[in-house]
Image (tube, rainbow, N blue to C red):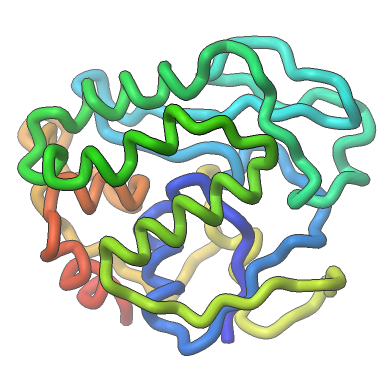
Length: 220
């Protein structure tokens, strides 16, 4: 069993855990943390790595700022469970994110192959971040043809086995001896070199059905 936090189009490392473990415990009771993969993903663009961030609300107060860098700014967000975090209805973030994905991956080998799978998520209104993340995860697992046995926590436990709830993060990730990013084709690789551990959509749009092979080869 492995413990994971929710993630918005999580990185390759995240899906390696979903693929490699017989059972997954998805954390729902933790206090929400800023600047994590819970509400952001990283993609490769013509200008380098770009962060796409979903604006969120806390304690009834909406976050201010652009969809690129807005975060929860309420004083009491730390008392809110991640499953209670609402998506802020401002900034037209769905349009911005979809436009960014099309711009970054429109010329990738498999974007058209998966476009109709992802486009609806950027038109349907979601109220809770956790719900959006989980529906995207279900879709990605379906496209990868993996069937992780996922359960959900009912209480928060500070100490659990195989805890990757905080280990997989954009900044200063914890060393993971079971994960070694396997290089694969990327649209802008000639310009920037291989960019490891980006969002799972980077792998899917570039490698298509062979994405599962990259996941398998990235697991030590």
